Amino acid sequence: MNSLHQEKSKKGFYWLLFAGSLIGVFLLGLLVASITERRAEAVFAYSPKVELADFEPRNEVWGQNFPWQYESYRKTQETDFRTPHGGNAMRDMLEEAPELVVLWAGYAFSKDYNQGRGHSYAITDTRNTLRTGGPLAPDKGMPSTCWTCKSPDVPRMMNQMGVKEFYSTTWAALGHEHPNSIGCADCHDPKTMNLTITRPALIEAYQAMGKDITKATHQEMRSLVCAQCHVEYYFDRKRPGAEGAFYLTFPWTKGMGPEEMLAYYDEFGFSDWTHPLSKAPMLKSQHPDYEVYTTGIHAERGVSCADCHMPYVSEGGLKYSNHHVTSPLKYVSQACQTCHRESEATLMKNVYDRQNKVAELRHKAEKLIVHAHVEAKAAWDAGATEAEMKDILYDIRAAQWFWDYVAASHGGSFHAPVESARVMGKAIDRAQSARVKLARVLATKGITAEIPYPDISTKAKAQAFIGLDMDALRQEKQVFKEQILPEWDRKAAERQAAMPMVRK
Image (tube, rainbow, N blue to C red; front, side, top):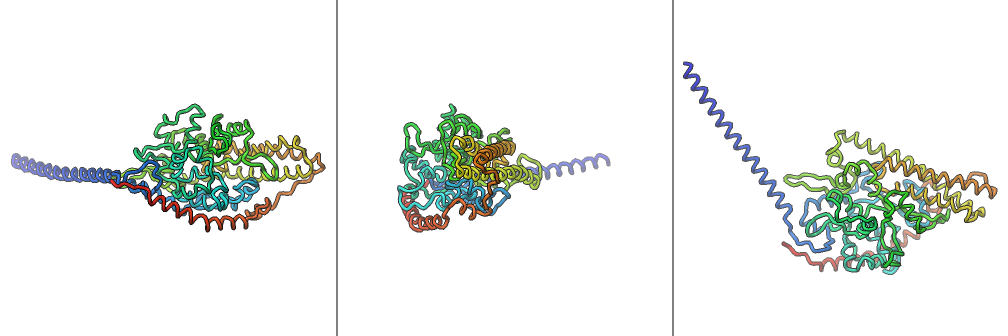
């Protein structure tokens, strides 16, 4: 009996083993099929459909070869996300902080300053802003250098014209040559798709510092392609060999910190404009995002711009970098939680806490510097001499530079909150120093009462205070949009229709 029972048990075991093997083979087959399918998807996805010509500026043409990246790029057209200090929606920064109008009196930013939208809007917004005016002739208005960070047509035009020549003409003269917004050709080589530097200013800045940018690692390039534009810069009109051109230059030879860049500008007495109230020689910080980022903890840990602003995503067998470049707070799970284990709510609170504290200091500095400009005007009106005002004007220049270094940096209060607070503290200190000295000068002129703070509670009131005729500026822009932009679009469409596109 025992022998018969053992024989039956063995048969049952063998049948179970056979069934298990069948199931295992079936599951293994499914896995192999899935891997094969995903590999096929990947091969299909990265099979070029068209041949990309050198300097191809049209994003939609690149999109035929890289549809997933292009579709994610197209989401930069969205304007549905707002945070307390950023997002992708257009925000009137002068309305939110009217003090900015007085700080930038005499400079184009006092007319119009909006939070930048996504890369897709670069051309539309630069055409529409009051800062670029309403030139009705190609030899009028802003320099062509103002296109440099707006379009992948720029490398094409620099190659066609020459760099110095590109910087030597006007914004209006090249309007019809720049229909494409920031996109693929700004950062990628069309043959290899490797990240590449297409703007000479960054290459030249590295050379001036004795560095070779071609030796940058891939991870460094994931930030450096952004640093082509998201940096502080100025127009060097005296560059040897390019005298008179508005030559785009980064002031980095003494360092990337605000003190070093201020010393750089001081060394040759550079100023962007003279403030009409205080008569101080002013500097306008552009958007030193890269410089501020390098002082933060993420940069210290080797995290690149793309890691957070263009995180990798997976779809089926594809893994690619999300080209929806925007605030990482729009997709915290992809951008932050790949490294941080905290909840989305906690991470967002961490960001806002840092931004709010720097913003508190920023608003304090803005009011103090406005005070200084207004009090300096009162001192001039009372008969102050240039000798009496010299140190005061430098304090105002330095205070506003330090303030603007932080204020103009996109996301700086999160990228480097400690450094941002330190620099904003210097702005407050310099503004207070100017006001103490002004009080002494005013006292010598018999003025001991407080100089009234102007009613600049709204953007309109602030612009009226500094004497801007906003109706005339808006009318000028409207005529430009009606008479000039259609002609730019017509010429651009005709030229692009004739550009070859070879299918593979």
